Length: 349
Image (cartoon, rainbow, N blue to C red):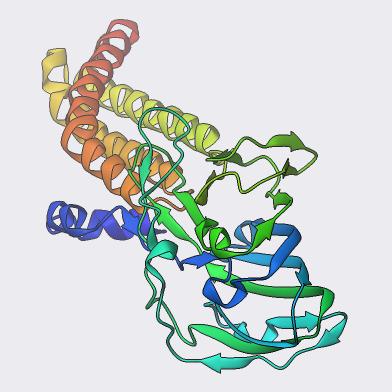
């Protein structure tokens, strides 16, 4: 466990915690830009699948379908989509049901509009900082060309992007962040409707910048026009269920160690016919072991989530505050047990 390793390398912890940024950039994503200038998008369905997070994979699967009307002559439309992740080969493009070949691109120029998001919704308090990094991972995207004859067409694009994250250390789990730029759609000749669906891991907290309604395992919304320049999403797993049982087990274990030390110390001084304060060394030793057990147990419990900052804070607070307090309180409790043991012990022969 990370918590045990942290205890062994305690000295450099403050520097490491201060140097680490709580913000990890995510892949920018967004609607296609100027290539659709002059074309009317009668409808778009946008499906964002966040369930890979349940399997520990920091990606979102995006499926976008465009119903496009070309009122003019035949047009050749080159399009680029950012689609980072190791399964970029699984990206698919279809035009009117026919597969379209997509080219892997090692690095794409990112339009400024795609980098506009600087924050995502918070579950409480101020919005969370967000960064988009066009250079995360390789390959960085896909490029394809559409030949659009006059009339209506259906274009389907599926790909995935890497999520960003924010880890303030105030929760066992970090907040995963996603941003999708809708601003490029303002360059299109027209836009009639957006159907939006966000598929969620079971039981996760979620916040969005657009008004969506919750249904079973997803958020949905329908908009008659472009609802804003950017869609941002924050998602966080619930606190691990094992944290409280582990904390209680560590506390009970520490109390058992303290009580055992008190009984042993009390019996030793009782047999020697000495005053109870002579049991202090045994009580102190027992409380040190009990404090170590408590620090390790609480640190491991708080290390069950995916937040690195939360684990650092717990270890530091337990070692520098909780541990010393536990030693003092444990010594006093052990001495109380020793005193009661001495009182009940028969007089030395």
